[in-house]
Image (cartoon, rainbow, N blue to C red; front, top):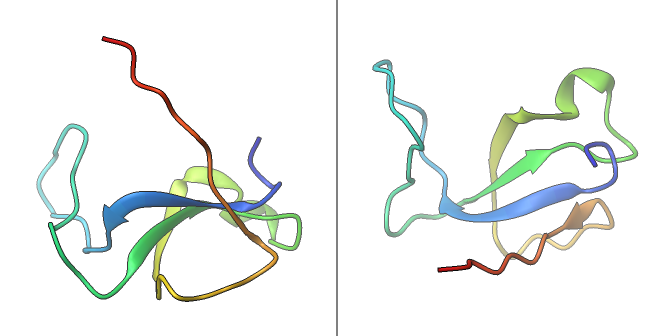
Length: 73
């Protein structure tokens, strides 16, 4: 799936802590949203779930996408 489009995620961007954290959550508010993965236009090193970057949520780009998720309880 990686390498198709960058994936917008729900979290606001914040640099990771130096301490190990399981399933880190971003701050409740912020200026930038997290974008993960990579796109068809990216170099190979960017096309992984470990790659993340904070991007202005108003940014419109042909490389951006999202995945619809339904939580089952």
